[in-house]
Image (cartoon, rainbow, N blue to C red):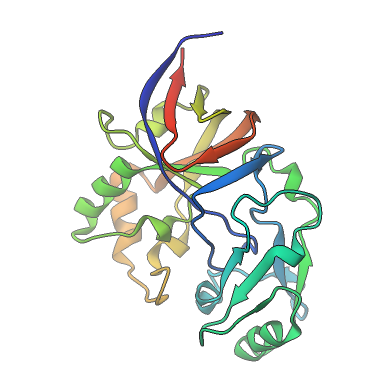
Length: 240
């Protein structure tokens, strides 16, 4: 086994069962394939235009929050474990047509929920970001930025690292708990980062700050190679 140097800890986990909606911050999550169990396994599909809805063209979607009843959920049929909290505070089953009809009404056209057929084929589904990168972007922006707005899956606290240290590790491997990850490529900034995750208020200056900070890149994409589970607080070690 190669030597691994502890460089920090896992500061946060985020999972988005429905790709375009708000997510949850579990204390632990299991790994399935190269990503997290239950992450981005559903889409909201625009029937009229034949495309998946995104928060880019429908920012109000972020106000619908999706969570699992059990943070450590695993298995093949996850739908019974998923709940959706609507903007008015009501929580309901994922399969309840009422919340989907509410989305359709807000969009002004029919919408349906569908399972993502190719979700398991994502080569590098894990968005990895460091606390140090977020803090640097706050300085560029001139105000606080909640890490949730970047919609990363893994937030790493790397006390001795420079901002964007995760970029320099592309091609290398990390241990987080008992999970071995490989960092694959940089992540382009998404316009969703300019939206407050709670209010959906737009702050265009965030994208300008990202552009100044690293040419529009925020974090990296990675994939799980082996392992079972990650927990908040797990040590992060870089291999080699």
